[in-house]
Image (tube, rainbow, N blue to C red):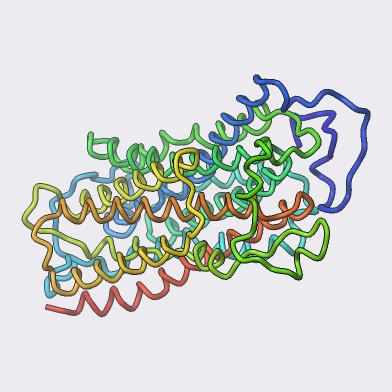
Length: 421
């Protein structure tokens, strides 16, 4: 790993190949190294997901605001609300915000699908550099774009950055104590909250979306600094770092005699766990939850939805030390019920106040964040040391696949609902 010279195990080697170097003290045993790694992975989670979240928060602006061809800097952050579809009560954009969601997630899905085939052969440092460069490029491309097509290309760069970074850093956790998974998850939740809140706050204060995006260029630089300068050299794997009394918590959710008969093999991920990671995504319907009798414009309502959702995600992704959930399939079931409830409201408009929608969306964020952090924590408990890197890289595929399918389904749903009077 770049910036970690003398590592006891070279992270640039392939998954099954180890390079033995001269023994050296394990830095993880020191309190200072522990905190550096904890802060490092928290910042990596924050920076890695930041551009992804900002693009989702800017989705309505990307699709609805018209750029003046000769003026790159002027994008009215608070335009007079106009109906793009006067025949619909939803004030629809010609293109659903699900298009931005798909541009923000499909490249990630491709990366995660291809990662198990050989991404581990590529050293970690070039992967992190590529992720940082793509994140910076996404902010620049969307900020200076004059068309939806170019803006979506910038969103694709953000997706590449986030997807490559997630696979890389989740694999990297296999070389550190298991506690860093909680730090990483909390950081990704923090990205959601800070990303959505910063975009909402800066645009609400009168800053144009372009200048708001340009002000965030320091985030990719912080990602590179966290990896190359903050993380310590990983020592011999000490994935536990926990008392032996926690052994019972490391048993698989569904016992498998076949796996127990093979010493050293990690227990397979249960079907319940796989479907929990397969996230149900309700963001695609946020745009259609439009309240006319409120002081917020349509664009502002969408930004608030994003910020509140990400606030819930941050709170639950940071809760692992306080609350651990074994039967995570319950969270997936509740997400499905939440989605059904919001879809019925979009159809019938029976909720009397936008503040009720605010609460429901924050609850959705709590469910999504809890499903994410507890699923990966359970994977870390159930897999053996030699399989953990591969398991972390592949398990996140279901999460991305669920979001992708939600976006695909939202496109025709958006067009259908927008044709209603």
